[in-house]
Length: 60
Image (cartoon, rainbow, N blue to C red; front, side, top):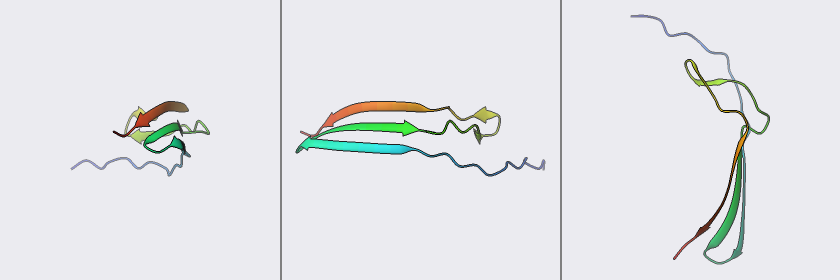
């Protein structure tokens, strides 16, 4: 059986913010990899750089 390659350790920081102005409605901001750390989350597949998602959700 082939030996799998080792990877050095890594760390990436994410940030999730949420604001609920009224009950059952929220606005959120999610920033992934805020320091744009370069690493591979799977062998030969580099992780994404800094990216963000801004959204709103409601519960009925």
